[in-house]
Length: 159
Image 1 (cartoon, rainbow, N blue to C red):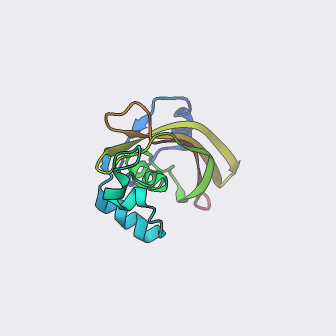
Image 2 (tube, rainbow, N blue to C red; image 1 turned 120 degrees about the horizontal axis):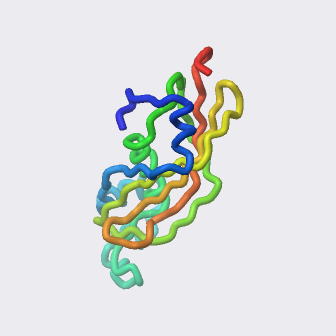
Image 3 (cartoon, one colour; image 1 turned 90 degrees about the horizontal axis):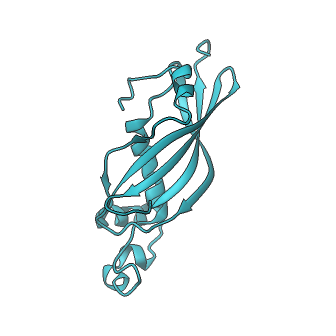
């Protein structure tokens, strides 16, 4: 979804319990996994040592769970329109996160977003709760399931 497209607060509230929104697919290549390992300094062999990882039950390297989780930002830019009048949106955290299936290197993932709550904490602070899943192309189980909290801060006079 284009960042220039916005929705009203009433439209955001109308999304609660509605249809899920899907991002495009993102390939989690070995190169992407290696770069994530370097940035996070998490070089566990199941992520970066292709030969050693072949001997594991995974049969090869897998993406870090936190890499799959961090892809939610890019995925949400495609699916989640900002609320009109927003000065900014910030990540407020998660109520729960579960890593339910490994993502083997080279597979594609996409985000599935369903709004489950919109709470006006104040005239300028809107807390949105979104059920998210990172689906793995061709797999039944998602890589992760979570309940993501986003805080929209409205510009003065916009609320």
